[in-house]
Length: 187
Image 1 (cartoon, rainbow, N blue to C red):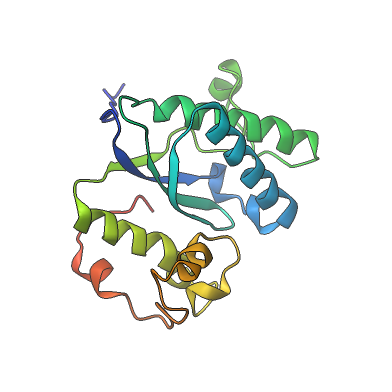
Image 2 (image 1 turned 60 degrees about the horizontal axis):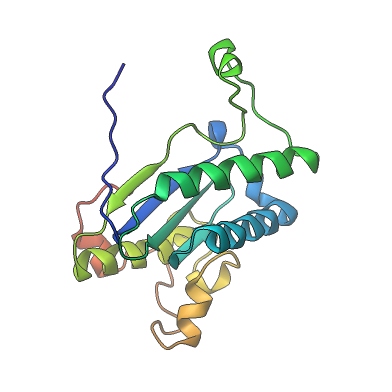
């Protein structure tokens, strides 16, 4: 068994990649994308944090969270979010992927991959690279040719605030900050 540990820095900022089980395109259905948004807002009410950026693709999401000073418990938030989403998703008729006997023994459902990928943001340049990656991800996966065309993204909020130009990241050309980074984004 691997000795798997997560970095937990009180008040830290973290980049996450969270995937569905067997890359099932759960969020291709608008009702399930909306359900995830509802559950994210609820977890933010229970255990506040700043949602700096998010993009939801059919089979995974990327997000950047900043936790409050002294708080380092993002695993609790993700655990609750995944559990609550799964419960409601199945109640709405969502289909889970097949699970192994071992997973069934531990009461794991076939909706989310068991683990998620996390990266502790080190500095402003690291934040900017991951921030851009989140917003450019639908272009990377060839769902759209411009980030502005993807509905499930915080990109629209940041355009409204003047952080991005509306045509930023258009085409399949990798934005410079992402190209210069050797960082694995968990995909």
